[in-house]
Length: 304
Image (cartoon, rainbow, N blue to C red; front, side, top):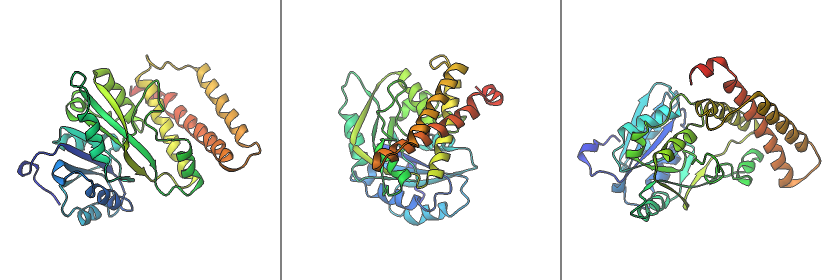
């Protein structure tokens, strides 16, 4: 499994995959990566085990045959710190990120590379994001994410960012800005992208670079995920308070909107329309709960 990077041709892309207790999914992710249409000499993979207590490391070893893959282990420190560990070990000109619960499609890396290699010489590419869609989205919670394009890289006009399950950046740029900020519980991808864009360089979107994502199956799991996103969102507002000022009045307005969405979700309806209303209300309330837990927390404020 472990190949000395000094003894192999330098990869064009290093793919970094953070994982914690991902025994049920990491094998499928790596098999999808091994099936990429670019030659295996073009990329290497770095799996960073962030304190798993299950069979994650064992499964990585079982499926790594024939791949240029390294497994790095660290005590639990969070996804941002795990990605930074992978970045430190990366040797490629480009660093692509995906997650253990993702399945890169066969032309994923080929499409990402084609997009940046086709950039204008006078405007060198900073990076590129692909399209992320659901995998086997049968439950209501998972279908809601697909119906509302919950992982769409182009849905953030003020602070655009690419979900870290399907993005590739120039390694030198990542190093210049110090990589991910490990203080974030979540939302670290938005912070990183914001700092990278301030550095300069063109960022592209390539819809042919598709990654399949296993969305949360139950509404309870979705609530927990969105509450975590809300906490990270609150951290982002603390970190970038000059660009995104917040106040008690704005907080009250956000809660009134969340309550309005909840009331709307309780009104009669059917089919996908009702599903979207319900999911939107759950998402809004969960994110507000998480946001309050970080943004208005004196201890959290002291960290920023």
